[in-house]
Image (cartoon, rainbow over all chains, first blue to last red; front, side):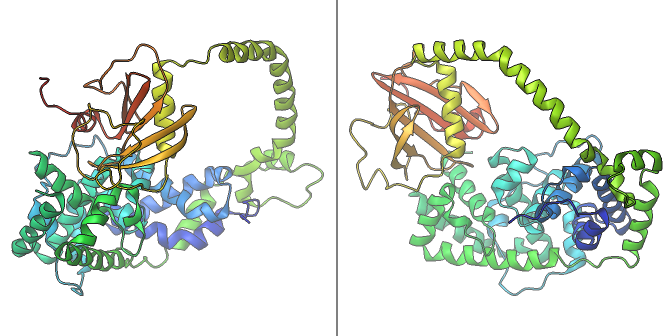
Length: 185
Length: 279
């Protein structure tokens, strides 16, 4: 049975979800200071709107939604993303590194920071919040095709930065060939 | 971008949209990808590597050290921002709540008014019911005197149905022939991997749904034996309705009503239409 929120205090939300909210904020903003500021804004707003939270089990998702909204509002005059800025080269997207390769934390954050905010939030929701592409589309009010496209481009960008997958073009072409066979081309 | 390149890109995007350790691949929108993975070992190996790479990145995403003292700094800020209005809090608490409210309870004081609000709302609802009842009865009678629906409403209901439609995948049209009385529209492009299934009730009657291959999102053509006035006899080149990330249009062929609903914009919708010149 769902636990109601009659006894849910802001302090309890802090105790249970502060770390998760901070990590989310850090992945989006890329700096400790900005992440801390954003985290504080999230909980300050949560404190004002605590009556909106109906079930304690949904607290994390509710806090994440506040965080996303604050982040999106904080982006001043978002610049349209040129199609070429993250041009999804088929080979780049398709090529992946060998399993087991280590992820360098600093390189990962630098790669995330390079993404335009519209792409960054999609890929953070996918990897950190474990949202499906449908959930991302619903929560951001975006067409599903847009989400899938941004996700593929952003993931390809992260892989390219993390593992220099451009060097593995052969793999990408082989995969492209396999897809064409599947499509009957 | 040519048709094949676009389809290839869409399949790559579908692959990238499957979360590691999930059952996303069973999503109807990924049926074509699932079939391709079952048939092609090379593609399967690649997909496995994408998933393993995703698992490594996903683990790294959560690996962020939390600065020491953050909880204390946050608690201090929260305490500072708590509304300091002891009189209001005391009034809200009332004589039946002698226990002092904790500071963070102040922001929830509106809940304390729920009983009074409920009484006002009940009275308002009763009044509205008395006033509106004759109107609602008239509307109901009018609706039941007119069994036909407008084209706009048919499309609205179809989109609503599509959004809730998660019926199991049916067989491929190329393997099991669909019912002859609910044929595929000739206005739809000759696409591969089209599946069909029966729908128990669509716009008031039994129907057949043709699930078209995904071009970024789902797409379904519904066919039902129903006549709706003022519809074209072939699919419009542009969707009649674009809402919530879906595009849709309807047309009438004899007694059959066709409604195409596509997840995507007008361009995606148009990709499903047969663009070959009329002969």
